[in-house]
Length: 178
Image (cartoon, rainbow, N blue to C red; front, side, top):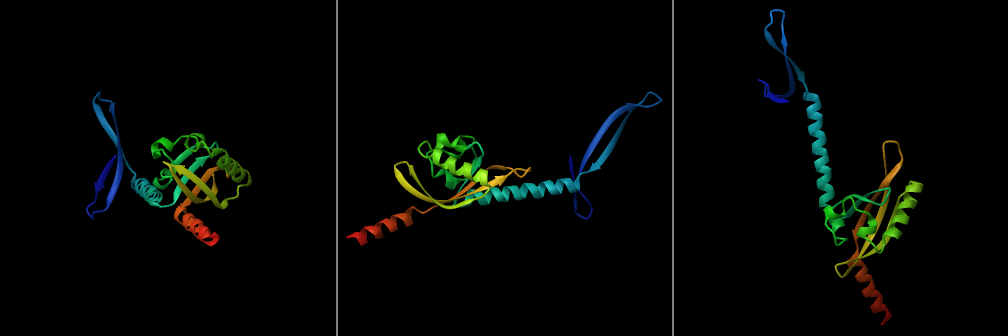
């Protein structure tokens, strides 16, 4: 594929296809076809940029984001999600929740199965994680995602770290009880 700059500085993308043939005189002749791929290439560039922008937004979000398939395997997580585990993003991706969260995966999976069956989200679930000796609290929202056939194909979970808020509430409760 070629990238061409026209006289008016507009960019075109083309594909050149050539082949050699023998003409009636027995001479080898090269023939070619130039195909304009400008529209297709520009669309692909826009799609790639949109995909990269979406990835950046997800990766930079302070909200933990988990994409799971219907079999409870992690397809993708962001950096904030990584902080809820003792694993890296690469170790989480493709792994079952039973490996990542051995103590809690059954409860999470039961929630997921309900969401997949009803095709309705669940909001405001309180979840507790123990990571590297620290107790962390998250408020989680889970929504189903759908494949091209309209079938619930997995879960997207958005979890906000509310540990400081929870500690403040507990401290306030202790103070009230004194």
